[in-house]
Image (tube, rainbow, N blue to C red; front, side, top):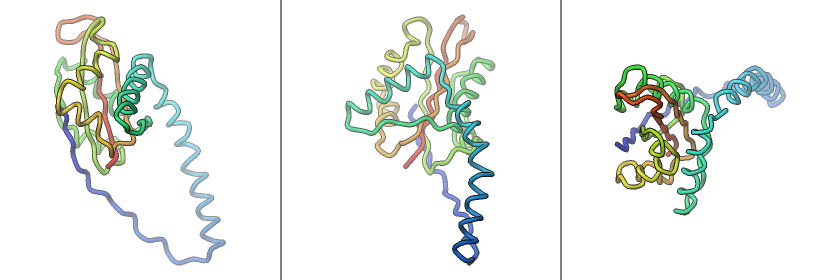
Length: 177
């Protein structure tokens, strides 16, 4: 269903008092050391497959039709969503499980999370059908249309699932306020 979980925000300790030039150099070194690897990792994680691209387009179209801003792909949420879709296919189980723990372990930033799941074959696996199904379910609709969400991770993978070959299993993880 449309689970929403509050994750506590951890604040980093205050920076030590140093002069502005030293702080500027330290910030520049920190940015070079952390952002360059993250940029290459992020581009890989946000490279969506065709099903995920279609879902993102339809999700943002529906949000726009309701006066909400579009969601941006979050690399940590994308990794978590893909991993969970693969887990559901591998274990042949369709459940949210420990959504909070899974998303917290992924390194995704909240402070709040939500998740929608779906699966289908043929026409029932297409993005418009999946999102139409979510919109028809009060909990999933609330997740999709939550104004505080600003990021999404999508995992849409094909496999043998619950006795159906070529099924698409979808995980949509949301984050924001």
